[in-house]
Length: 544
Image (cartoon, rainbow, N blue to C red):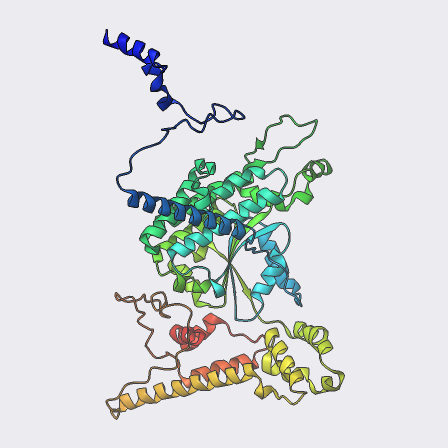
């Protein structure tokens, strides 16, 4: 009765029913669809209205969210700019290269054959890098170059990232430059170490190896470089091995009427002939050559470490270096997937490799100085054209050859200084001559002091002073990895037993070796015959 009387009372006063009086609270001024006009602005909307008990914290969280979005946007922009500035490691021939046919022929014969672990030895400034650049600049090779003169790594974490970058670049180049190899972009994803902020929200994370790379990068950011272990490097090399296996077994799709399938074919060629077939494709029959012409020739990957004797100084972990070198042996000798070349100017590096049980699996190439005939051709064809006519008569080839031998770098430096001094520049004033003369005299003086100290000790007239230690020359190998000449290993403290010991040769022995070098037409002395004459330790100390 009360409700009916209330309704009738409202109707009597011209008011709307009570149910309609509360309907406006549930209406909205938002259009149900696009293009429809808004409802009356006088109607209230309680959508998302709530009471905020802590407005300061809400404003703070909104400010932090806005700051995070700005940082993410800036990082994405920087990553896109960095992607356009990729570092390339293409091998181009050095300008003014002087051809050495015998050495080039030996390098080409090794690189065109089955994959091998090659150690390229030679004194400093004999042209090892120039020769390799001349050979590896051909389009059939892709070089994963690590120049340890400006090494991009000095610990395990930076080594890991450098390896990732080079491996990613190889497969990325194959997917972009070789027709039909676009599928190898996925292999490049497995080695990416950049664009982390962009890739963290990208669907490409379904690739398992990308998860691995991102986890390593986050591990380094959170725990520091020491968080990367030898097992991480081993897993990376295993990933590279599987990717190379896929690369060599892959056959690109051919759009031809005679093709048996439109899907990509995967072959199972013999591992021993995988690279040899790519190199000797020109020797096949005309019909096979015609079929092969439709496909791009596969490029041979070459891992090249220049100045490789600096590796022990950069990576102090013996386990990590053993793991890396063993992986290189697997890639070359076992699976025949790629070439590995180590160039070094330190002969003791071979002893270090022998300690790690690597050296007997390697091929050794020794690059020496140029012969007198080659030096004469270089002097006549390369150097004399840059000398003014009035100064050419002052350059005597025989005198210069007696001073510099077959080191072409020394010739070029002296001729440049000679021209700059307007011809008033004697051989004895050249930098290389002065350095060699100074080092020889220092060695003789220190060796004489040690010999005199030994005689005084035998006679009992030696004072209680510090014994002479001999003249020390910097070695790129650290004390932890330096191998003693007698074959003894380092002591328990990690320092070499012979690091502070005086040299084992005398001044007379050094003079005798110098006399043998000057009177020998070959300008060399056989190692083992010299060891029998004066002893192994004396010879090895002279080499150091």
